[in-house]
Image (cartoon, rainbow, N blue to C red):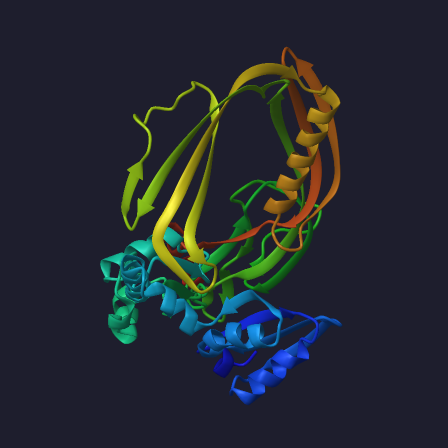
Length: 411
């Protein structure tokens, strides 16, 4: 069916009689075009004619001795012909179309993507302060001006753009990559132990190694000294290096064996509200939660076509399901296994790059309504931590140089 046929409208009819083809001949003689003719049986024909020619067909069917039956009428012209008798409905339809057009020029849904460190709420608040929010007139948005204002409020962002599709705004942001820490190679520093351990390997890139493999060190003890010898005595430099050591960890975690489990009572309460723009209309009295212990399930149905446009009207349905809390004793073995896994995963996550857990063991104890798990583990990790020189370090170098440069008394 083409557009040219659908716009003025057409009528599909059925002719039943002894010689239904005679009706087709009369239609051709009287200028009534026939299309899509279908022979149902020897006495029945179905075909389409333009809607404007429908008045001629009853007389032609009577002349051919056939019975006429209208199957359906379709077309834009027929629709408006009917609407002429229903002025109020036509006006309402036109107002609805106008409302849809005006509504499509405003933003009723905002989606934010690309953010990780900056929360979505922060971005939405910044956009609203800059004049872009629910109900904003999107043709008046100046992208360049908006980008500058939002990035001034959120310096963590490096890029932001607002793409509008109908009444849905898609906000795409890119966050700034933090600048890496700059190490001042000219600032004097020692490499000290970040934790206690037994040294297995020392790799001094700058400075002088102060420990050797097999030696045990405590936290804060110097591993690679930034005091280096020179032709005039000693000088301060930025010590760098890796010191691999065996470390030992002991940690304890506890978890209760009694858990409160929800048991639905079967009692439910449903509330309905209508949101129009930024206004909420509640179809219930009071805002107090109906039950002391209950789950709240919220379903929001927006008047929209997903991905195309959204109208500022949505229906909110809140369902409150009451429950009671019943004590439930958990399986001791399962609780203990969960604690062991959490302790081991936590230790591995804390180890620096290249570190590994060499061996570990667990001790499980049940006391009262709780399970206690103690983990003892041996790790191999880099314990080197850079520590800037203090005034005492500089003073020690000056004293060493003074002693070395003092001339020996002549006999």
